[in-house]
Image 1 (cartoon, helix red, strand yellow):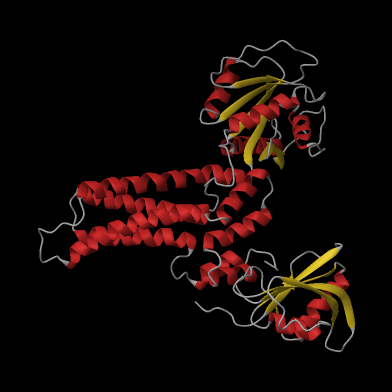
Image 2 (image 1 turned 60 degrees about the horizontal axis):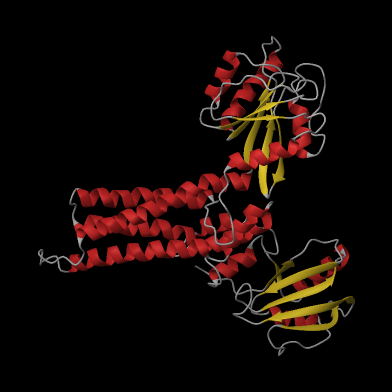
Length: 452
């Protein structure tokens, strides 16, 4: 895989702030900067900061700057690197970048700094992806998960699995080397099977964690359902702390799905306000009700809002539709009727609120967090959040289970060893431990921002 030998530059911070930072990386990063800087920094020690004036090649002053010098391999990219700190004016930053390009650098591509860090062995592929996740983190949980991945906890877990697979592969291939002595057996089959099952169980656990990881990343889907004019839009506005949905006494005001997110106790919840469920001849409203049932099916938590005693048929219907979901029954408008209704749905939470008055909304938020059943997350947690990682784990699981079946069927050693090698390759796809196609690399890094 080719590593670029040119020098790149780009803004590392948005323009318009008090301070702006321009980053350079490559073999000529220090030399190019020195051409424009009022001080010679070609022999400056690593991890030092110099104050001076940045000028263009014509000698025109651009700004007073601080220049930070990082020597290879002790930099983010593993290359010679410089960071220029100046005032955050868009004009100043543009002039500085233009001068650096004139002096021999080129504009960096999106994600090129992190791609170079990966290519230079500063991080593996899963850690590189974690950089983008940290930048995109929208809540405490996703930040901690990205930080854990960046620190290499997921990579370490995969490394352990690969070591175990390599041990199995090596023993089987050693037997193949002595295939003319069929009586020789270097690997105890019962021990190998136990090890294969242990690997299978761990891969299964990691793959299953993707459901939680994806929910944390995208926001836990919560559908708000109920009859027309029961207060769904008012509740949505309360939960979002803004007037997102139109509130009206007219039945059927909400005819389409309204979605937005908010953070509760560090977790992102994605609320879906749906059209009121009732019989109607209005074609548009019917389409909205159909989408209500669709979104109800997609949600992991359902808030069933009621303001009158529901019939047995209504209770049976919602219970059937939510049999594999967390159901919270919300009695709204307790400022008018405070007596609880007779509800016979088992395993459902029941909360009384007044969305209009804002009463007991804290109880509802606490219940939402509780039923979401999010595991305790810290910087050491290993929860899969990437669809690419999940797919590789699923394939690895299928392969290791094929190995177990092969042992039970007493398949030949060469077939078992081949499946073990395939499993190793599938796990290696996650960290980039083998040669990864350039197309895959480009697809990963193109989603990064310029400057990273």
